[in-house]
Image (tube, rainbow, N blue to C red; front, side):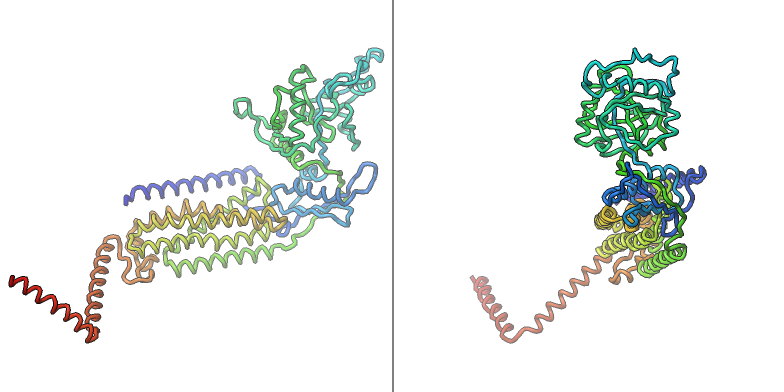
Length: 573
């Protein structure tokens, strides 16, 4: 077997692992330097404490909120503040009247808005556009010249929706003042209205609702791209409608694409305020639309979250807010860390007892897996607000044994190949081909269990499932990019290749003596084994002849006497 290929493969794999670690470390250093994250993972409510808010429902008309509305609100708020399921927030109802939200740390202004806002989303066509402020009285349309509808409106874009009263309201409407004194009044979805767009400092008369926000099935934010697929530098929100919404949006865009001026636009309103009023450039038949405008990354993310998780059936007012202490605290965190260290020490002792200095590969692999897990936890805390709970720490501790199991499977396959008479370099390659199937199957089962547990559970159990799945992925990366490449390199060294008694590959440790004496002695060992086998066979034949009975000997002699005359007769003839 050529040694150049495996060595080149090992060096390339270690290089890729180094690039991955350096890239993740560089991102973390940049985040810490910019003040966006810290060196430590974020902790969950049970380990750090946080904020508890009691939300009082506000129902139009002063009616009491039903239990169904509260339960629906709990699910929507949970999705808004913990959409990934790893922020460890707790949302419950209290006495059937209020909603209690407990969150790690201190909620930001954006999180408070996500908790309180009802986020009623509507799609209305634009009929008329104007300036953001009120039209000066001297420039307003005289009463005798106000537009009068000539017929019943044919569609939501028809100018016949504009009545004299609506035109007067539009001209007198001061968006700055109205937005500062916003009320919780609900607009009639079947009638036109005046709405403002703070991002473009414009106001519009918009027609009746054509697509309700409930017809949105998914929303995400990302950088805006042009028709050629290139990033333009701006941010956009991508929408996906359900079957009903897809048909409605297709009909709207078919009508608007042939119109000019302001009527070519459709307005997207959130709680009565326009968040975007894009023009219609084509018929959108697949139900996938992009909202673009003067979005920042933060505002695009916020809008996407509000659209994705739906409108609350009721709005809420924060009735009280207080800081709460950790439910478990620093003592449990310290005990969890001690348990992890004890588990790591036990694995190390077993590895050295069973594999001698080959156990150093196990320890080094666990260290690399731990480094990858640490970087992932900190970066996920920054990007996805992941919070490490005591259940998550338990998942990491369990993963120590699961990770070491992968290395044990590999080492034992190598030993099996050595027992078959292979040299170490060949045993490493052949053993890897067989062991990696077992390792991948094992990790696939771990990942499947983690995913199922994550999907069906809530709260701390999700944290356990998340870390269990994360460490399984880290284990696969380490086995493929570190453990196997390191063994490929060690197999070419004299210490391991010749089976030193401290290498873990000493013949006396493999169950057969002599079994493995180095690459140059395998053939001689086989020849010695064949000679010993022949000697044993000859001795067995002699013993069988000695134990023959008298009848068996006479029978054998009779065969000889029959044969002898025949031979003599043949010679005489």
